[in-house]
Image (cartoon, one colour):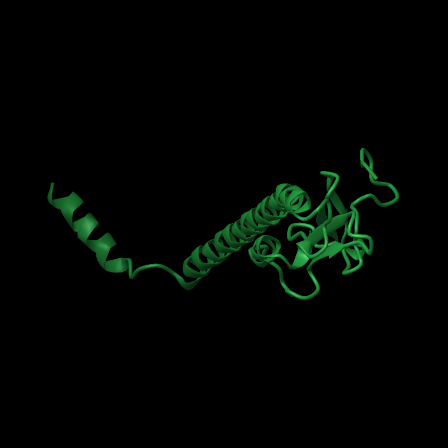
Length: 158
């Protein structure tokens, strides 16, 4: 018994803690895990923003039809209406002036709205008075947009 106790006491006295290499390995592992978690959480935040973009733009389809019915079969003034402005103001955007648009055509018979997406910022989401809900190229989401049907967009009602 005595021999075992002396050996244990000697071992405890000799160990002075962790070596520098061990500490560096632990820190490196923590840094790697933290970067993975931060990257993943950023992706989920961007997916949430994309869902918000789509949800707020889709609201405009119904609001546009109500506007059309109450305004003598015309979309004139729809994009400047309270409901359209509120829906667009709730769409997250990196640049409020360049990333989201709503436009009524010159004859007030059609409208479209679009906003840039976040997961793939080369894409934008577009809705229009025909009920089209499409992902389009971000370069097509401009202040002149009046429909969501562009070349190469499948299943679109022009």
